[in-house]
Image (cartoon, rainbow, N blue to C red; front, side, top):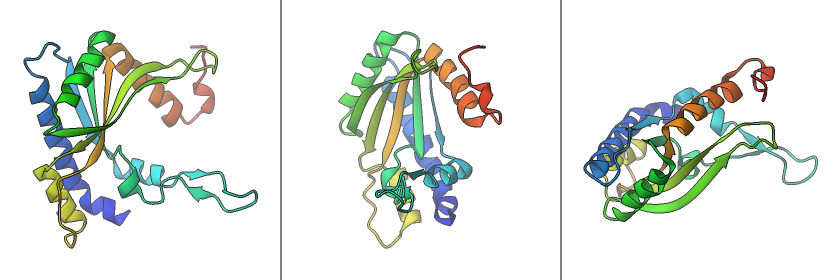
Length: 191
């Protein structure tokens, strides 16, 4: 926890730099997003996520941490969202970003449908890219803050979600209801 608290200011600069790059990249293209936003995971959210456990490997065994090495396995310490007007624009934005290979290396691309009527939840669709920065100076500064004994290479994985404004609004509402509501009955298909 102390490490994350110490390096988070440098990680916030990575978030700021990635946002600047994406906004410039999408400016004057065939699709103009409504907005591009981002955040650096809060200390509290980081603590909660790295504390998650999975079922034991063997019956009766001890629970296993879901993220035993969070600095290597979490791709959402820096999170970016590109908000579009129409669903067809999501693919256009993803392709623009993926074509910028000198800036980002796309390591994952999937359409994520969250929730379903069958499960009793109402979801949304979102395009999720896992991107790796290439020779990014803000990332090098973060890497030096994290461990000055290892040469900084400017390579860092982060998540970029691309969704419509309607999906964005619903995801914000749904997230707050499901994960932040104190009363579990707050999440019901009946409003």
